[in-house]
Length: 154
Image (cartoon, rainbow, N blue to C red; front, side):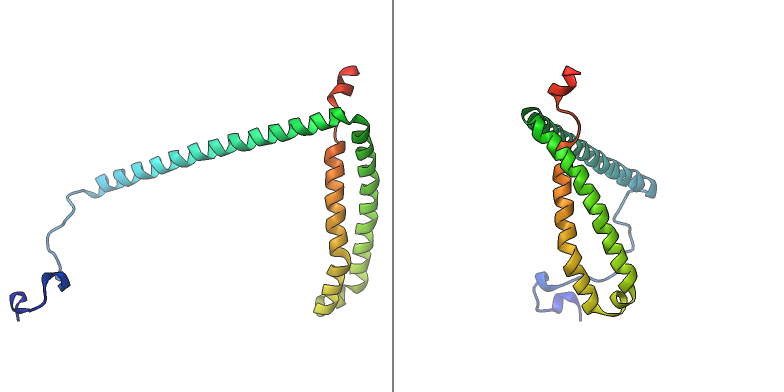
């Protein structure tokens, strides 16, 4: 049965016969060069986008540092108090970490074997540790360095 005898329209026919001639007139070297050029263009675009991203991040960091320094200059006593509080809280954190490690040493086998004991441990120490770290981080940031006004006086 030939294709002409088939009552289906050409839209529903698919030619699956193998073609003997090459549809590409490119050599392997030309194809490789073309693909390498496309890869180079893609890498150049990525490099440009990454450099723009770095510039934006640097600008945001610089603005944030400037605002923090303005706050420190406006509140020098509070900045010094934050530094002292961060130092004290750091000692509290050290003691807290010591109590956590002692608890792990004492109950390590139970923590490994029992999910209930592990959940109890996490519920007991996890929130306190997270909150303590958050508070310590804020105090440390607000209390770092001397305000610009004090640096100029020295």
